[in-house]
Each structure stands twice: as structure tokens, then as C-alpha cells.
Length: 173
Image (cartoon, rainbow, N blue to C red; front, side, top):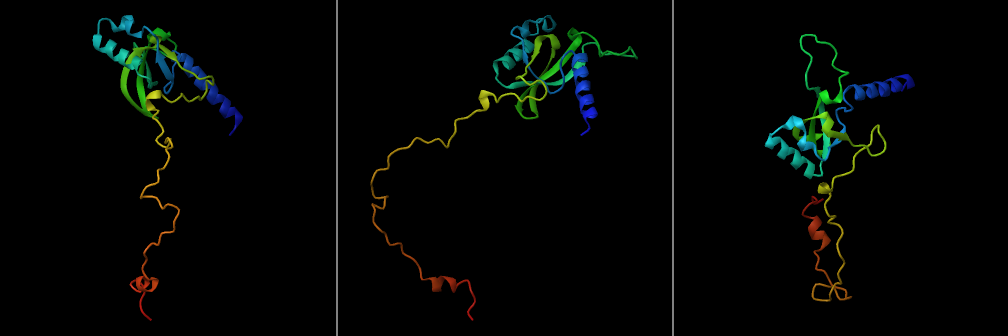
């Protein structure tokens, strides 16, 4: 790949991040501790309850859309460079890679972007709710000598004559 094109792609995504209030679609985010007390939610208890439920879950939150709180109508001009308070962000819980549910729209100022060191393409850790105990880890127990063991003796296993069994499948010649 041409290095000029690679640089251009990185440069453009950086510009887009800072013209969209700091968020891009696909970013892993978390809600700030008092997000449900934000003035834009007012007295809407349903939204506050949903935000509390999302905050109590350990599932990752992904940005699914970034939009203006006040969209441009009738050719009002470029709305890319408005402040983050003017951005509404759709977030959803990620239940599998690329599979989202429980989508909600919140103001961008109640969100924080989550990065694990590498800001370009770091993958988030696996949530604890997805981790299950490994069934292959069996605690060893001592086998007791009983009738099911061979007791270190040769046991004759009854068998059928090989000629009689193959004659059923092969034609006689």
C-alpha cells in the first residue's frame, strides 16, 4: 500500500474525530458516573432507568451514530464544527462483535471514550458476563477397584469369525 494513502486515511479519521465532538462510529465508550442526572433527560424516569441499567451492566457500549442536536435545514451551512454539547450520540450494548441491542441516544458530554493504550485499533477486553467456567477442568478423583475394572487380568472378548462377517459384504467368487 502506498504510504501517502495510508497517511491520508489516518489524517482524515483524526480530523473526523475532532469535528464530530470526539466520537466516531464504532468507538467503545462509557457513561460518566452521574450521566442520568444530565439536564437533557429532565424528569424522564424511563430514560434514567435505562441509563442506570446500562451502567450496571458490564457489556461494552459502542457508538452507533453521531448526530447534531440541531440539524442543518434549508442549507443552513456546515454543522461539522459545532461544540460537543451540540452532538447527540447513539450508543448500544455490544452482545457479540458487531451485534448491538438496547440502543439509546445521549448527549456527547455524558460519555467518555475508552481506550486500552493503543488509540488506533485496540480491542476491548472480554466482559466478565461472557466468561464461563471451563468445563474441561475436572478435579481428579481416585478410581476404586470394583467390578467395572479389569483388575489387571486379560479378559477374553468374544468375537465373530472374520470369514463369516466379510462374506456378508463381499460377493462370492
